[in-house]
Image (cartoon, rainbow, N blue to C red; front, top):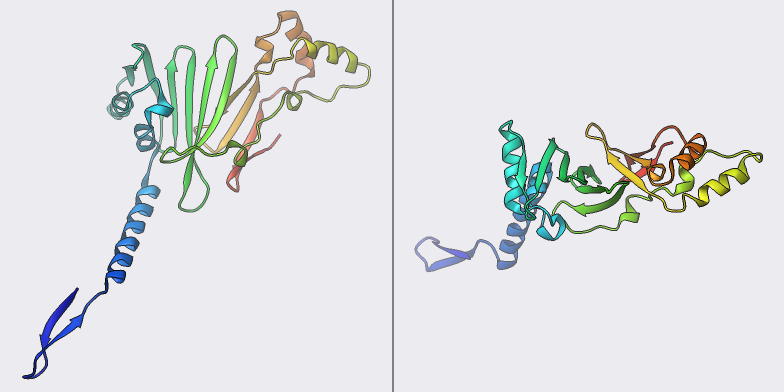
Length: 235
């Protein structure tokens, strides 16, 4: 791009204003600024609505937008999902969401900071049929999947048991053979960036076995805190 001017009474002089490379660079900088501003301004409602059907499955984009609109209007945020069942958005804040996806399943989502300008989505799907069990996933805010192990190392069954003294170790070993399958329910806090795990295997085993196992278990759920861009166990 150039402009034409005159110097004195001589011939016109062509003065270059910007080269093509400079023009592209400026456009790129502006685009980056706009993108950064948009990503910082995102709230959970925006991320939820833009959730792709491949991740959502049960809810269409119209369903998700309707839930947000109903919540904003102080109405019951209940919709008929793609399987002709009822789904209800229970809680929606700037960075947290709780959805009753089906009568047996819930979704929880939380926006978590990984830097001053970047957040990711922690997404927990829990199914209670009848024993509650959860799957924890991580995504970028535009729903690109992330590797879970980079942000969370889930607990194993041993994490929920208190150390057994030598007199009871054999009894505990026998009991745990009856609880050979591990079920864990994960839950996000709407008020902070913590995550908790509850050992739900006791709901799966026989009642008698559950009562005998209970004294060997930690009394509280395992708690994780978000720090340094990943979850760290605190108890």
